[in-house]
Image (tube, rainbow, N blue to C red; front, side, top):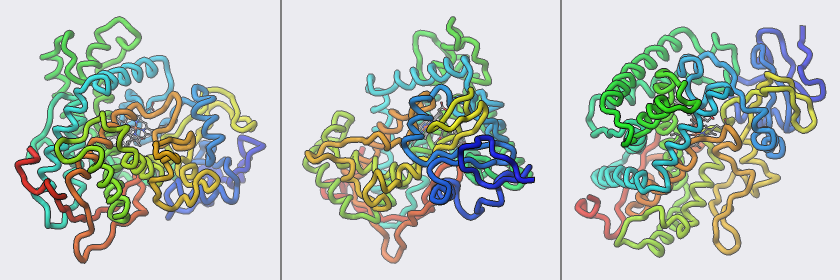
Length: 478
Ligand code: HEM
Ligand code: PLO
């Protein structure tokens, strides 16, 4: 009983009822690599069945542009998935909520409150620089010993998001921070074993013990968030928006469409900003350091650029962004070669429409394989090579080609994009102004393949930290 594909003109993987195209998929490959490989046989655009759900995979830029930008609104839906429904109380967040007018105003509210903390004001910069200072003195204290950069980066990034969402920060040994790290870790490990794609029948991939652990972690998270929300309500003053929670409360009390968002929406949004803010940024920074350990010549060139453009007498600031094109290109190259979200979040067609002239019916799921777009040899010369200078033009200015889309594009583009870029720039420039990162004696180079869970992460590694001339004294870092 092989199923007839929903779209007659598109190639489709063989599919059985219930199992969908499972038998044609390889359990040992993460979805982005699997789809890239299948693309060689079926072409850049093909269909498959994820259990009962007809799903179209988009492997090339031309079709991705159609889905995300030209027909962005038609493809702005999200599927219901077992674990993300649990995570977001049935889609009361932004990322996993299906399209609706309420979602739209909810998203706009979140976006504008991020903008409020963003580049216009210097508040965000102050927050990040404060954490960068703390991070640098921690690194200086560990100079000479092998260091796992994961936990220290995680804490710095957590504190940035914490200030933004709750207007509070954690000291290194705060027990609440430990609780946050633990529940977050539990969610990351259970929410998306095979990626966010729910590609295998969920009972197979999410054994009950995982669902149980996920529920426990969510419940710990929710208790903590509820407490924060109650504290905020008690001290809320409309004239002083301290953070994202205040901005959401203000929206709730206002007269716009967003005034119908519930306390559940407020909680889920805070949880998501927190989760997204921490997981993506810290992972990207870990990839940056991993690639720099592999490419000391890139690190040297960044050092040179920093020495020439910033020097030692002051710390880098956002105003230096235009002056550090090579550093910025390195960050882009890292996000190209290892996008943290290689197949984005699944999209859904909200109406009957088409991709590349093939008709697509309402409800079809669409997976945009950003990995294959970022590794397409037709667009990128030697796509497997790490070459930051590919983002520089002949005059040394940075440029960003249209097929470089680490944050997605269109109505579902990442809401944290400018926040993330700002953080990456400030953390990277502060760290590299002061330190040289290397491989500890006898230790292996970091693995660059990574592991795909909810985001594409590098495996754990250790590095050595050496202060650069002029930065050896603890007193200069405070
Ligand atoms: C969505 C990338 C940081 C919040 C996304 C998507 C990508 C992405 C690819 C999915 C787009 C789609 O489905 O078409 C990244 C990268 C980051 C980053 C590469 C950092 C390097 C952040 C941060 C936040 C954030 C810091 C918030 C504080 C969100 C939210 C969505 C999202 C709420 C869902 C948007 C929607 O569905 O409408 N991000 N992100 N992200 N991101 Fe990010
Ligand atoms: C990370 C673990 C948190 O505990 C919960 C959470 C919320 C939002 C998710 C994030 C996790 C992973 C990265 C996601 C983000 C929304 C957008 C972002 C999926 C699961 C990306 C990169 O698409």
